[in-house]
Amino acid sequence: VTMQASCPRNVFVLREKTAWVTNAVCMRIMRRLRLVLAPFMHLLQPILVMDTATPHIARDVLWLCGGLGLWVVLAPAKMTWLLQPLDTDGFAVYKAMVQDEYQAAQMRAAGGSVGVCELISAICVAVRKVLQGRRWDSAFERDGFGDRQG
Image (tube, rainbow, N blue to C red; front, side, top):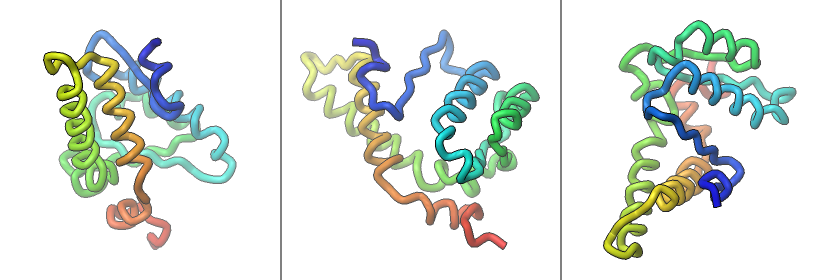
């Protein structure tokens, strides 16, 4: 069983030679995002709130976003902690959940050795419980991206 096959439909495994995000990786992510948003594009306008990391602001990445109908809002450097909903309300809880699930897998494993598939499984649990298992409207509202902005 491949790692991707063991994941829910909304989790995509992207394996590269390096863990660094590159322009090419950003572009793959944007194309995938547009694909999953396709059924909603006639109803809603996707807006991506991203930091100013070099791959995010690369000309080819921003042009691709525009061509795909994805609007980009750049959070100023060192301000995502205040302006990006995943930073303000998601990542800390998400990382803690991944760690808890990984440690549980270590306790179940012979000798405490956990493989990549078990790590991916821990990530999938965190996605389901943290990212999907909560309402995000208040986070967007607090960060200035709610539907009541004037």
